[in-house]
Length: 219
Image (cartoon, rainbow, N blue to C red; front, side):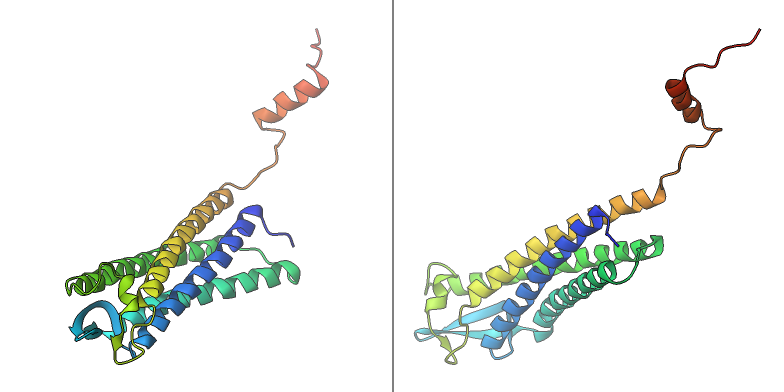
């Protein structure tokens, strides 16, 4: 079975969304792991002699939420992609109106979750950077990666990882918005299916008259 072209484009977007979500979850998890499980988002850094320390981390559940939402949506994209690839190759499967309605609800919920995650990453990283810059130990947050952290090994590439996670989340948001638009288009096509012309339709008479001409009138 050949999938409609709109659904093929949708699956390509799901593949890209899977990569973005997985990358964002991995980058944030790596950053949290470098801080020994503490969440650096909205955290406060202090200067301990010549090294930095995360003195007031935020709740670990905040990072768990962002990484978990990105990871679960990435897993959903992967499973959905595999399902439709299998269905198009093996089975004669078609997504009906009920399936499309469920997909619309899931896409709307995914957009909300990705938007919240991207905003948390954006403002949480900015809050952490402001606390670092107030210490007057560096001129930028990216330069703070070169300063040793306490304990040793803490904060390795923290800004690069958080920045990459944020960018991946914004790209993921755009992809989900395009997916929602494509699903709405498919919903409209399903709502107005093609119906062949009938003899009683006015278009039928105009089409036949154009092909065979007007019938001669009888006196």
